[in-house]
Length: 404
Ligand SMILES: Cc1ncc(COP(=O)(O)O)c(C=O)c1O
Image: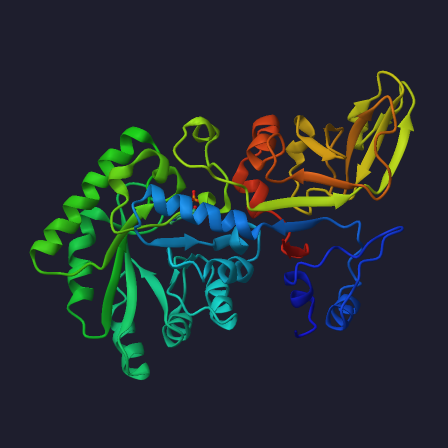
């Protein structure tokens, strides 16, 4: 094993033990440990649960009748690390390929040895387009790039595989559906182009979604009647997996559901899919102390102790991705109990109230969220109002990731 920080993290080693316990290290992991000593064992870390990822993919596949899954792993793999997630998902036959937004993420997948199809849903310039095409990364196209595609295909001596994005009403990116036909006809007529897919994105508004899928079908069927092949049609995010089985089309394109998190709290109780969170955020208690009645805590004295009370300070703050809103009701697990976050969440710290007794000590593991009922990301979201997308995608990319 190459002794890099990455290999240390991905080996899923136990965090170097603090205080009394020392893990047994193989020679290779000993070398890896040396390269990782810049992390304090108290620092927050992200765990990725391999079995839960696998389970969620199987659940989605069951739900969509075995249609291929284009796994959305944008924004640093929803906090887990784009290459980490891709490597874990790649062996699953249900996974057709991967979709990202940032050009560098698409390239990093190829650098990581990922050979399955990669769709780049974000913007690029002509140089990016050439580099992407050279590495078989499919761009998502919605403007008249025909001449540029001809030029690059001639240079690379191969046609460029791409997906076309049609805007049926989200108003973000994509050619407006009522202007899509001329663009698609133009692309389809070029020998430099291979249309591998045609896609749209829902606004996730129950009523309007129906109009969006109607617009998509109308646009696609008119072109197909002219003999134009549109490749795999896809639209379904996690929301759609729950709400619109009629929009599963040829392939589905979820993100959050793969990571085992219900994108809307109401889906938890719908009995449609059993999703198991594949991501946890943990840290170790940095300090424990007793506040006396009337003592305050946090910037602006956000909290005042009504009575003598024990508090624990965790070295996790909003710079790590733990939202400021967590101070409005989120709970943290320590030694099997849940304790409320109090005061304000600062950049690198938060404080939890642990009651009249000293029920935590320095070095105890604190779970900000994990797969357990009560401390799932959705529980944190319900308790303090932070979105599950913020909880995962805002996790600082520099935190260690450990696959367990
Ligand atoms: C175009 C597109 N498709 C699919 C997804 C996946 O969405 P979700 O994570 O809600 O499944 C996203 C994410 O926002 C997206 O931007």
